[in-house]
Length: 112
Length: 236
Image (cartoon, helix red, strand yellow):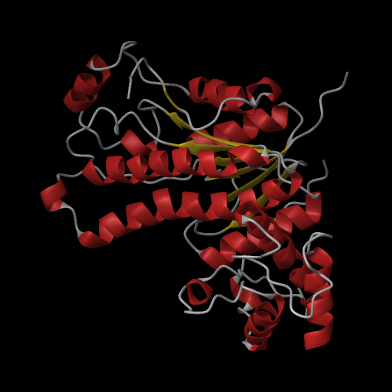
């Protein structure tokens, strides 16, 4: 999947805010995502990150796994608030993409 | 009313049970997305194949997301891919143990994780993992294989609870030995002794396994989750 556009903090912030539930503090300067006062419970965070991975693939052409070992081992979670998540995703997007030639592609063109 | 065609992802479709399952679902009118380490051995207008190792995280992520992009959803995941190595635990190389755990447990985990993300978004989906009667029977000579499947069983039961509120069921089938490549090197006397421990003393068939998988996938089985169903009358 080719990169579609470079990531910038403001478009990434908008993309993330669009995925937050309406009552999730999207109007706050830096909404808390998870934890005390957060917009999401644990299943909500799972849904949110799953949606975000697909939206990032559509917007930036990168297949990221956000709940990586790196994210989980940080003393300050990148999922605590929107700004932390924006910074973390920008960091991931700045890294070289996996060699696309190494990844499998489908043989066969089924139509349901 | 015409039955809705399902989008089913099956791992390990090049031979044995996985191939049998794929052929069954294709006959039912479903679309099957399969994978194996080698190229496709199955050609069908509703079959797509990915060549990958199930413990390769990037490859699994790429396959699952490609399936969702192409079909919009995955209705069911059948984690069939598995390997075995019959050996006394004291004679098992560490690399063999790692390889078995990587394919049987790590591969199952990766596909469950990636597919469940898409199922949770839709609040619907069925996952069927593969265990074995070697686990409840504590079969000598299969310590690592049985341990890897014990991990699959435990993972299945915990994941069922984690996804219970999201409309996704997670179950496992535990086949008896089938006449597949996995048992081709097992001595006849050992196989006879194993069958003696079953309530119904015969080798299993692919159809026996299909029956259980279809039960877990049936529309009426939405209240069945966290279960491990052994064939042949073996109990846990």
